[in-house]
Image (cartoon, rainbow, N blue to C red):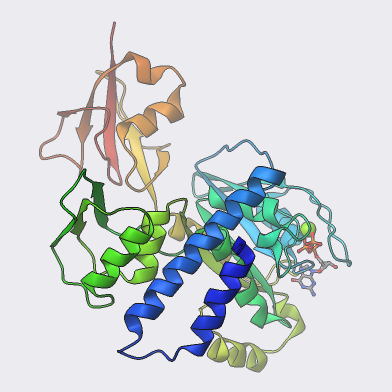
Length: 366
Ligand SMILES: Nc1nc2c(ncn2[C@@H]2O[C@H](COP(=O)(O)OP(=O)(O)OP(=O)(O)O)[C@@H](O)[C@H]2O)c(=O)[nH]1
Ligand SMILES: [Mg+2]
């Protein structure tokens, strides 16, 4: 049996099996098997076509945000309104055929926005430019899912396509540690108890991925899907916001009904008529969770006027990289005043994690 046939036979079996307490283990393992086969199929495909590489675009700015949506939902119109770029807008589908970057400057942050061609159902399996479009989202800090008021249900299509290529929206990587050992079977230690999957299912999934001996440390109540994600690797954890565009075409009642029916909360806008575009900018800024770092030259005055903008959990090395390419090499130590240290002027290493409004001095080797 080839991979496609194996996939089909598992799908058939899953649809035949009722899900209940007695079959839970069996179904869980089938799902993990399916994920593994899909991954293998993916590997074969990308070896033969090399098509999973995204469009090449240089990342600049403090964060990168990508616009993902079906054709003609208004991605390019929105890029132009957010950044002043001039991406072509057209009343026909597939106007945009490559990645078009713009820079949105907002509250001191520089946010790179990437406009992309529209994707359609099946994009992740190589329809049109789809795979290359989706691949750009893997390394984004934030994905904006853009919907048209008249086709709101297509949100599922986009989420599925992103999921198929390994993008996990609004999730954190599972907090578990897995370590292979030479022998001794699989031993498990739990800091929290597992309620969504049994230990025996967990072990079976690990064995499916070739781990017969090892140590597992459970720090979070993960389910079988999360464990499969973790063990199969190659997953991308990206935040998202959902935007409902073209609200200039409908009335308030229509919108309220839409929000009630919709699974996820969306931000209603009109890119073309510029309704709510500033509220969207605020939402983007908040979601990216920036911190401000005030630089203080050695022996000098702190610059409180123009903070450096960084993502939360940035370290001193991230700040060095923003300032100058070579600074990391010359770094001796840092001095920090603020929330991330116990006392003002504390000496820190290059891996020290900074917090919002910290003051930082970088001391270089002579
Ligand atoms: N009424 C209305 N029309 C809009 C709005 N935003 C975009 N449009 C129109 O929708 C059509 C498609 O807009 P684009 O910005 O080219 O859409 P796109 O998503 O970039 O399309 P592709 O590049 O083909 O994927 C154009 O005719 C726009 O003028 C809006 O907020 N309201
Ligand atoms: Mg476009």
